[in-house]
Amino acid sequence: MHKTILSTASVLLVLGYWSSAFGAEAPEWSPAKGPLMTRWAKDVSPQKVHPEYPRPQMVRKEWLNLNGLWDYSIRELSSVKAAPYDGKILVPFCAESALSGVMKRVGADKRLWYHRTFEIPKAWAGRRLLLHFGAIDWEARVRVNNKDIGVHRGGYDPFTFDITGALKPEGPQELTVCVWDPTDKGPQPRGKQVSKPRGIWYSPVTGIWRTVWLEPAPKVHIQSLTIVPDVDKQVVRVTANVSGAVKGGAILIQKSGKTELKSVSGKTNSEIVVPIANPHLWSPDDPYLYDIEVLLLGAAEDSRPADSVKSYFGMRKIEVARDAKGVNRLLLNGKILFQLGPLDQGWWPDGLYTAPSDEALRYDVEALKKLGMNMIRKHVKVEPDRWYYHCDKLGMLVWQDMPNGKGAGDKGKPDENRAVISPFDRELKNVIESLRNHPSIVMWVPFNEGWGQHDSGRISAWIKRMDPTRLVNHASGWKDKGFGDVKDIHKYPGPAMAKLEDKRAIVLGEFGGLGLPVKGHLWWDKKNWGYRNFKTRQDLTAAYVNLMRKLHPLIGQGLAAAVYTQTTDVEGEVNGLMTYDRAIVKPDAKAVAKSHRELYTPPK
Image (cartoon, rainbow, N blue to C red; front, side, top):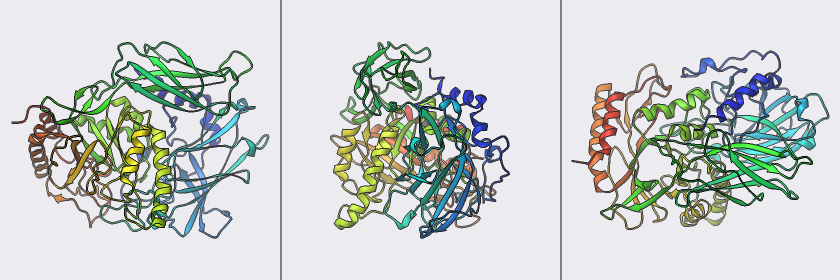
C-alpha cells in the first residue's frame, strides 16, 4: 500500500527547511474576524500553514516551503510600485479570507502585491532552482530580485518558473508577485465567484490560494509524469517528460516500498510499458496504490541518477457498457457500480477557496465515506493535489468539473467567443494534465448548466483524445448537445431520470438541495436559502430518506449515478449535509448511511 508520500514533508521539516524559510521566530499574526470559522482555524499559524509536500505524485527529497507571512499591498491598476506595504498576509489564503489576516476585497480595478525574501540552502549550490505556485487567481506577474521572471494567467492550474538566472550569489533573495483578478468582470474561468455575492454565487477569491514552494533540480530534470493504467493488458504506461535533451539518457522505473513491480527502463519523453502480473485493482472498497520511483539516468558524470522522483498509481478502469438487459451502465473494473455522491463546492468559511489545513481537507472525504457515498462531483472548482491524494488513498471516485466563466455561448459573436475560448481551452488543458494521474478521477465535466458553454462537440472530442481512459460528461444539466459518455439532467428536489439512450449512460447530475439553517453555524443571519427548507433535523432526515426511496426504483430502470446537492452549506446556501463550518452533520448520519446501503439492493 501507499505509505511513503506523507512522510517526506515530515522528514524535511525535521531537517530545518521550515525554519530556514521563516527564520527563528515568526512575526505576530492573527486571523481577521470572519462571520464563521472552522475548528481547524485555531491550529493555523505562520509556523504551521499547509506544511505538507504539495505534489504527492511527483515527490523530490529536498524542498523549501514558502507558505507563511508575506508583505502585501492593494494598489490602483496604474501603480507600478507596491511599497510601502499595507501589512502582512498569510499565504496561501486569499486576501478576502479571514485566515489571510487581511479579509479585504481587491476588485477588478486594483492589483494585489506580494513580497517576501528567502535564502537558498547551501547544499543546493550548482543546481537549478524551480519556483512552484499551486495556484494564483488570476493573472500573476512574478519578479525575483527585481528581474521579471514570467506571467501566468489562470486561477486553477499550477505553474513553475526556473528562477536560477535571477538569483544573487548569496544572501537574501527577493520575491515579488503582482496579481490582478477581474472576477466576474472578465471572461476567464472563475467558478462561482462574483463581485457581489448572493444566492448560489459566492465571495471573490484574489491572489495566492495554494502552496508556494522551491526545489532544486539538475539542469536536465524530470518535469512531469504521465501515468496511464491499462487493466485489460495488465500494464501501466509511464512517460517521464524531461527538460532538454539527454545524451544517452534513460528512465528507470522501479518499485518504491513493498509493491510488486519489476524494474523497467526506457527512453526519456517516451512511453515505458511496465508489466503488472495479476494487478491489484483500485476501487472505493479497496483503494490499493502502487508506489514507484522514477530515475533519470545518463545525464550525470558519475553513475548516480541525475534526478529522481517518487510517485504512485492505481490500477482501475472506468467505462460505459450494457448490462444483461441491454441498458447502459457505469462499470468500474468490469463490474456495474452505481455511483452516489454529493455536489462538492470545496469552499471554507475561514479560508474561502483554501482549507485551513490538510486535516480539514481530508475530513470532508472521510465524512462522506462514512455516510456511505462512493463518489464526489467536484463542482466548478479545482482542488489542490492533496485533496485528490486523499480521494486516491481513501477510495473516493471523482467527477471533475472545469470552472466556468462568463461565456458568449455556441452562438456568440466571433470576437466574444475568442475571448472565452482562448483562456478556457488553455486552462482546461493545464488542469487535465496536472490531475490526470489520479486514479480517483473517473469523469471530466467541462460545462455546467450552460455557463460559458461553447464548442461542445470540439471540446468533448478533444478531451477524449487527450485522455481516452476516462469518461466525458460534456454538459451537466440543461444544454445537452448529444456528446460525451453520459446524458446528465438536473432535477430539484427530484429525483428523476432522462430516457434511456443507445450509446450513453443516464445520470442525475444534481438533485435534492434540502435545506436546514442551523443557528450559530450560519454565514449570514438572514438571506439563507435551500431548494426546499425544513425547520428540524428530524424533518430533514425524513425528507432525505424519502428522497433515497424514490431514487431506488430509478436505478432499476437504468439510472447509473446520482449527485445530491450538497456536501456542506456554502455562504447563503443551507442545503448541505453538513454546516458550512463542518461542525454538524445535519440529518441523522445513521439513517442517511442506511438509506444509501439500500440503494445497492434490488429495487422493490
